[in-house]
Length: 208
Ligand code: GRF
Image (tube, rainbow, N blue to C red):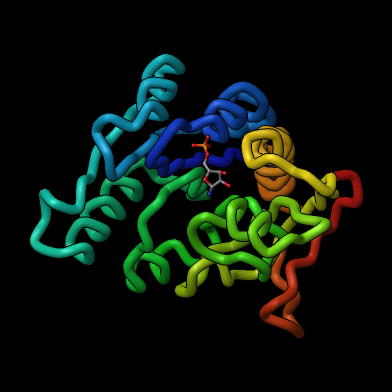
């Protein structure tokens, strides 16, 4: 069986990390081997410890620059020999050299139908804008903010008077399915870039 060693970066609650740990970790050769954070108090770190996964903390303030922090964090991830890096609510923009280092093996989950509402406060801005449909995207990470090639998306229709917490809950439910699905597909070798179009991701398996 092919092995997929995964590193995850979190800044906050870590419910997406929990979904990965609960659904794909330890199955089909998929193993979460390390979880890193920019915040020592990120609740996601405790979820990793509870699952027996190694953790590392890399606060930007401990380094001379963001680039140095990202280099140290990258070295730590490489020491764990990861084949895939998952950003699961990592709330800092990563340095360009870090992004290039993990290019084509780093994915992110974002609570909008990209390219709408890239960046922070995506759900709030979608509601303020008055959209009737929003959703979740899982995409490869490039040097922009939420601009990388899209792997999977799922829409969510909004009622006229959508309240933020209800929408957040429903989007989280979608994220907790979509992100593990993307990881399963990558583990199976079913995800590849279209050689004719760098924006397009080809999925060889129709049942994601
Ligand atoms: C999610 O909404 C994800 O889309 C965004 O950050 C949030 C992380 O939530 N990138 P959690 O920490 O996984 O609960």
